[in-house]
Every structure is written in structure tokens, then in C-alpha cells.
Length: 199
Image (cartoon, rainbow, N blue to C red; front, side):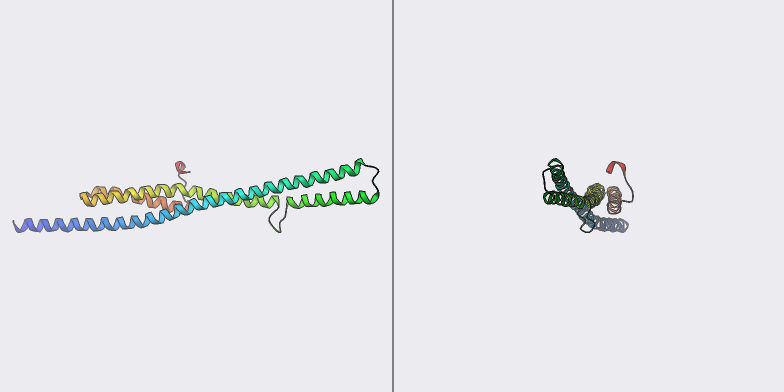
């Protein structure tokens, strides 16, 4: 073997080793991004589920308040009709029926709005809408994380294969997919750009 051939083989080995080292570092970076993406996707899914449950609970509470409000109004109507129908009632009975009807009307009015407890029907609707907004935000984030995870996993596989097969073009393809996956992950956290088919 000539010295020139040996030197050429050493140069090829060094170039191959440099390629493998860079590919390994790229795999490590993509694996880290994949972990961050998985965390973001899991958090978005939990956030969507929790806020959906909170909104449903508040709507159920709203419905219960609405039913009770209707029952109080019906009871007040019943007392008022009894007061009007029966002319034989003495003044004390009339006053008691009127007082009871007034109490029911006040309770029904209180159910409409209770700013101090935030448990009136108006306040409950506002709270439920707040949870729906949070849920919808998390649901918008989730697809970006899903696609980012898939692209990052594919990128890691392609770069791993490029090391074994010594195919740099495959590493570049994997790097490109990894870059797109990273951008989708960042967009999942920030929602800076709305991609139509992902919403």
C-alpha cells in the first residue's frame, strides 16, 4: 500500500468520524426537542380535558340554579294566585302569603346575579365561558405538538440510518424534518402562526 493511499483512507475515516459525531449530536438535540414536545402535548391535552370538565360542571350548576329559580318563581305565583282567588282570607293570612311570595321572588332574583359569590346565573355563564376559552386554546395547541412529535421521531430515525449507511443526504433530510418539527413545537407553545389544516 502506498503512503498516499493510506493518507487518503485516514482522511476518509476522519471525515466519516466527523459526520458520525455531528449526526449523533443532532440526534441528541432532536431527542431533547422531542421530550419538550411530548411534555407540551401532554400538558395541552390535560388542559383541554380539565377545562372542559370545569366548564361542564359550571353549566350544570347554572342549570341547577335555573331550575331552582323557576321553582321559586312558580311557588311565588302560586301564593300570589291564592292571595287573589280567596277573598275570605283574613289580613294576617294575606300578609303571610304576600311575605312568602316576596321571599321567593327575592331568592329567585338573587339566583340571577350574585357578584359577591360569583354563583349567580350571570356570573356562572361568564366563568363557564372563561373555561371554554382556555379549553379551546389548549385544543388549538395540541395538533402542533402531535405533528412536531411525529416529525422529530422520523428525523431521529433518518439520521440514525444515515450513520449506519453513511449517507449524509439522509442526515440532511432528517435535519430538515427536525427543523420543521422544532418550528411546529415552538408554534404549539406560542400559537404565533395559524396553519389552516391543523385547526
